[in-house]
Length: 174
Image (cartoon, rainbow, N blue to C red; front, side, top):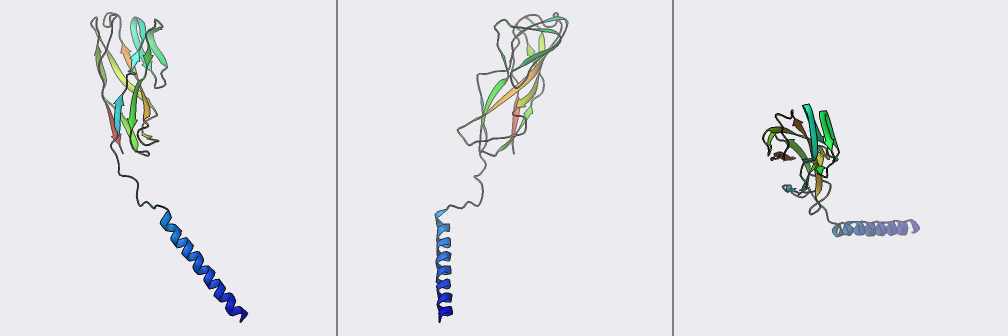
């Protein structure tokens, strides 16, 4: 008689546990897949790719802006600190968290000068490096910094002045 009651008691406890476990599944949402892909949004900010003030000797060289905003030169280009700012380009990208994005820099760009002449702009690396993953959902943007290098010729082909132009970047959402 005692064994029968134990078995009956165990059966009841098992049924109660099963009912509790089964009913608790209805209180937690279950997802079968991630949210559908959302096209990324690219916003160009007011922080442009800018090389600041510099001068060159007789043979020229290059000025480079790294994605972290530091500046360097090669050849006989001398970097000047005359109050002109230099910076990497800043672009804001929004999209679903977990979206993988690759950056494809456009071709080199010839920048005409205000006093004649031209210089060649080559886009450089980005920070974060390409490809990267968008870490958070909108409206929080990912800040993408893009550097570049400016080919500087001798003074005869690159007289003093302002050199400006536009460049293209392609973003590939995976």
